[in-house]
Length: 136
Image (cartoon, helix red, strand yellow):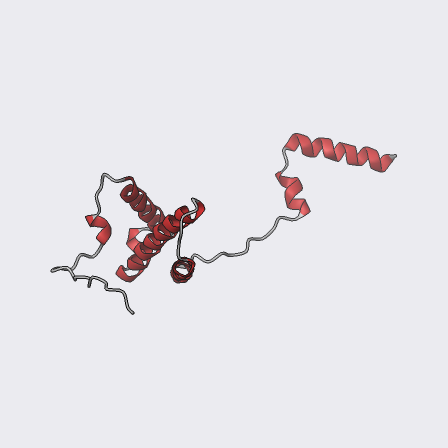
C-alpha cells in the first residue's frame, strides 16, 4: 500500500534560485552560499556561467549537503536508506561530470624533477657525495 504523501505546491511566481530565499543567519545557509561562491569561481566565475550551468552548480551543492547529512546520520549509528544515499551520490557524480569536475590523472614527477626541486644546499651536498663515491 502506497504511503499517503502531501502533494507539493508550486509557488505562485518563479524564483530563479531558492538559495536566495534561505535564512541568511543560519550556518547551513552560509555554508551553502560559500560553496556556491567557491564552485562558481572554480568553474570560471559569474561571467562564464549560463543559467543552465548555474542550475547544475546549485543542484550539485544541494546534493552534496544532502549526502553529508545522510553520512552524518550513518556515522552516528542512526538509520539511513542506503539506496537513497547511493542515488544521491550517483546523481551528484553525474552533475559533477557535466560541470567538468571528474578526476583527471596528473603527471608524476620523474627522479630528475624531484632532484631539481630539492633545496640547493641538499643538491650541492648530494652532488659532492656522488663525486666522492665515484672517485673511490
